[in-house]
Image 1 (tube, rainbow, N blue to C red):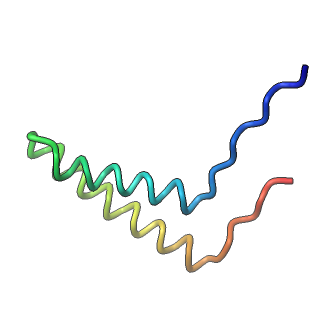
Image 2 (cartoon, rainbow, N blue to C red):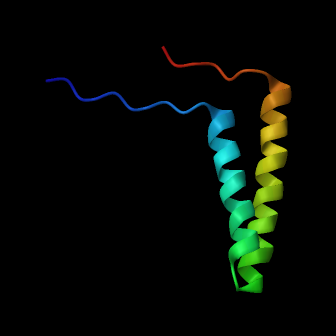
Length: 62
């Protein structure tokens, strides 16, 4: 039996999920350091997502 294929997640979908998780953590955490760092991550991922969108579609694997 062949090995199961890995599920491919589009780059934008993955980055949106990461940004969403970081935003939630920045609001829900009680630790101010965690909130601050999560907010920084959310901003960085949003910036990366915008760059990916400007660059166009990512090439797909065959």
